Image 1 (cartoon, rainbow, N blue to C red):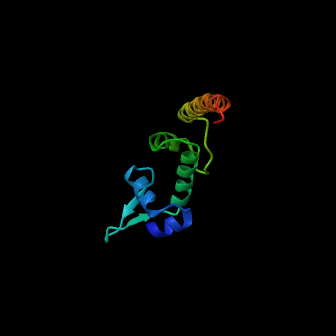
Image 2 (cartoon, rainbow, N blue to C red; image 1 turned 60 degrees about the vertical axis):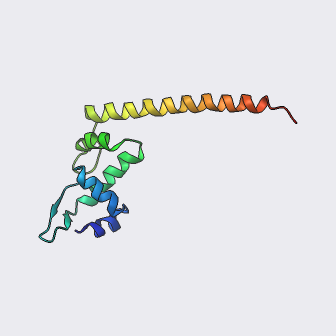
Image 3 (cartoon, helix red, strand yellow; image 1 turned 180 degrees about the vertical axis):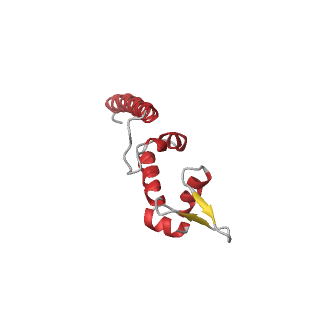
Length: 116
């Protein structure tokens, strides 16, 4: 299928699909006219990429975790996936701690405002 059709079926822009293809996250072949041709399984591949991006992984981590999916689309408990997901949880926990600290500072500043 051509990139426009893949974009329509996956809900992802052609620009993003070209980027994924350049990073070898998607596989395509070039037609004689230079157009990218994607297999039908590319829709599922894009779904997997988007899932990993939606949980906060960067594209480098996505590339490392993609091989951990089974052919039917399930993420296995391979060491790479476990390590990356644990790392992402740690990053989320750190962000929460920073936001809680910021909230405390904001609340303290608000409480100390002088009516003028």
